[in-house]
Length: 357
Image (cartoon, rainbow, N blue to C red):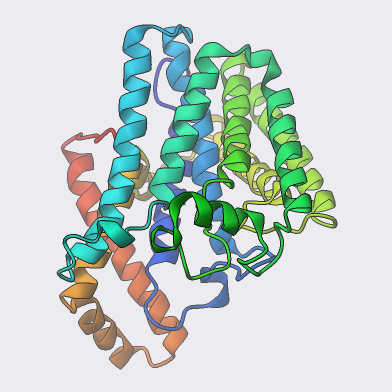
């Protein structure tokens, strides 16, 4: 299994990216389950990004184990180059959103943080951990990071829905300035301090990647992932009584709950695909899984483009003319947009073109 791509992991990645595109591209009034929770709590929509970070942690381990985690100049250059590239792509997406409206020189008010930037930081930090730290301390580091972040939240009013007193919002404001931060919620959901718990999140995926690699049989891998998933879900649920689930601040309970659910999902897919050999249904998600980041980036750019040339509104109005209920029309538009990106991915898939970002 380790000598080739793990199909079940590609499928989970594909399900996750298709889900990210779906929930990000409703038009108008969406179902509650397809919107992020406003503050405390968790909707199905809140699972997609943490699932991706968890999967990235697994992939980090399975990728770097090929070089035996040796910090050679070549490996380090590759990690640094990819980290910078991912961060730059995130900035480009933010810039493109302004530029397409004619604000080409938007650098004075360009948002610094977003999804790709968090992916970049977490990837870079966890990859360097993999090269320079003893992996037997992985769980200890995860626990330490979550404990530090818990202290920050408690002492710094991290759960306050007021940016004036919330330490996470204030850190971004003081470090980067008002014009460069997110204004649609009290706290930037991809802000700098939330990276602490996000790194712990990716490290949990890294730990599961280690289990996948070291367990000899598929059955043992499935059991290991199931145990980790169950422990994390239970731990996250219990912790949520003192530290509520909250995606905006990437709370410790949210880390445990979403990593646990992702681990259980990976175990289930591994059982179905690798043990039961039922993979005939996987092509759609495989298309998204093998070009995950490329299709996510293209979906963001395409959404911005279609919105600004008013194609999105035209398509939505056409859908709404057929489907009267607003929420169902919004859902149908989101499905249409997923299929549009699938078509792009399918061309790459058929030509065996895999874009590595």
